[in-house]
Length: 410
Image (cartoon, rainbow, N blue to C red; front, side):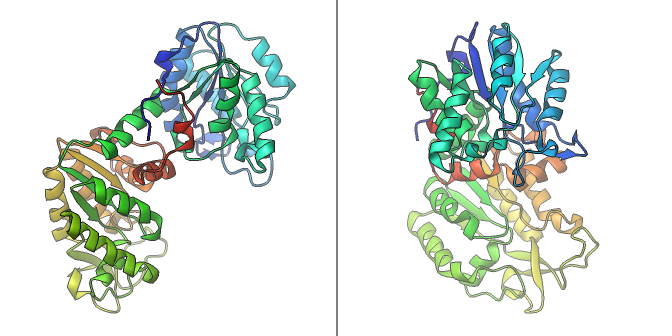
């Protein structure tokens, strides 16, 4: 995967109209933004382009927009918050057409250093490039508004959408640059290099519920890392593949042979594959999920048939922490148990603390792991927390991401 991409530092934005694809897919409640992390993450690239005298045109999707354009999924609250953060007005184009006459007029009126935010790109059904030709038309309309294009939306970079990758074709056709922003560059540097060129020992930790979600990640990381740790619900399929009783624990029976293959592959490659040696078990799943629950810790080979494993036990916590303590690079994706329940979050917290105490480069692969680390107040102790759940998983699989591929090589 070519990771040496042109960045905002490689383009001269002065007097140019620069379209920046951001990830403003923020959580909203009653029209108010409840978590502004993604807005804050976009600021360095936006400020750089403003300071260089660019005319900065921002675009992003928000939500899934299943019922067509609507005010609940409008980017208006984002424009308001951005204006506050930048200390200057961000002109919002409320037009549901995104690239229509209102957008053209707003862009024509721009002076150097001005910022315009277009409406939710998914208000145009063509954004998701189905059918492809309609997506091409929308991409061309976006390109018509700008001279250069910058992608800074890592969380969307695994999707070949009109505003993420198709637009670059039309910007390039008229001689424009297609670069990545600071946020994208950071993701490429940490995630890309961790997998392709890690400082060793390299430890990868995978958790979460299902083996099926991480099939290609397990396979790819086994070839790259020195130690692969598997926790969370997916560990029980591996334990069953070893012939253990797993009680009522989560299991993916169709993937038992795959788990056997992966354990054999680890042995053949001389890699360590660590599974939980004990489990925190419960009789009934808590309802609601964060309700108090009684637990019993058992060794992994002594699971009662009527109980369910929902977290790693203290022996596993110590085993995994020891592997992390000796590492130079650690990538973690997926919690160790039902971390939404305070009683069943101990394993995830122990792993997070082990990473926080480590001198290794520690990379959290987005999604639930990022949420867990932030909830536990350990986010600032990690080298990098990825902003894209699905995108970071695909990066770890070794897949080429359309949003990364579409940027110009240096």
